[in-house]
Length: 352
Image (cartoon, rainbow, N blue to C red; front, side, top):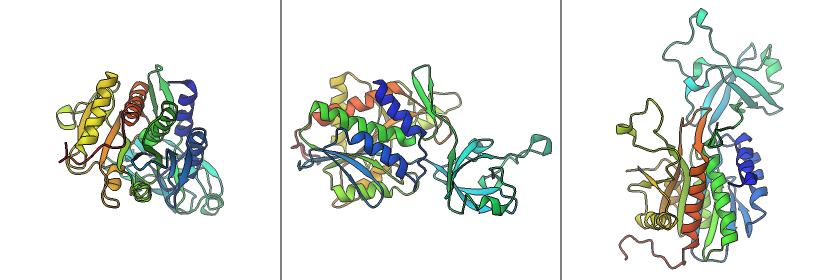
């Protein structure tokens, strides 16, 4: 992976983007994509979409959501401590003792999630978010309210780390990696050339309601759509592979199989993988995928969808971990599949 592109990924990962507050990261994404997209479009949900060949009738929508999980301030007590609820799937046990950045209405403020000392009894075994609080150093509610108000968001204060020049670790790889991947696919297709329209969307709100994906697909009316998200790697201690499947880092991107997935799109992806001599892994999504694919599929007259996922360790924690090799291979898989499209493909599973 070129150093410039790796730097762009790290910049995305450093940028706070809790669901409903994606404006800053979207501006950075658009600035990067503007160098090679034929055009950039936005919508009232906050999606940013880079386009190649906008005149083409066969349209491929790639969706990688840029929002991350976070916290939302729901009460400020008399002593200036901030109490909070979750935005997306926060694990309370992972939050204990973490530093956070509160995206206050009047300033970005550093705080710590306090924890009762073990000498004083520690946390009870069945604690929840309502038992935690953020300490920003304020001495009163009045002082806190000069900077923070109810509804302000917060994210863990962590920087991404590169492990052995092989893996990247940090918060919010779910799914700023997806926003990065769709941008890189667009860039390489611009260089390589393709015969279909390509719409690379950095979507919003996936962690909370998937509304961004709905807006994007409803507005574009694509011929087909692929969600580029993450899935659970199971290659670390303590995971029951019999229950959760066998997905490993550095073993390639993961294709979903199940009722929501269009089998002909999967065949195109598998054909591209064979051409590249690239390994793919599989996961099962029997009813729903739990990703942007679900909302895109149900727009307009219906959209054939597939899901290509990046294996990810430690989902929804401050130290999510993924492989640069898997990122590169997912980009190459999508580029090859889309570049090979003629625009005359039928995605009807009942047609040969």
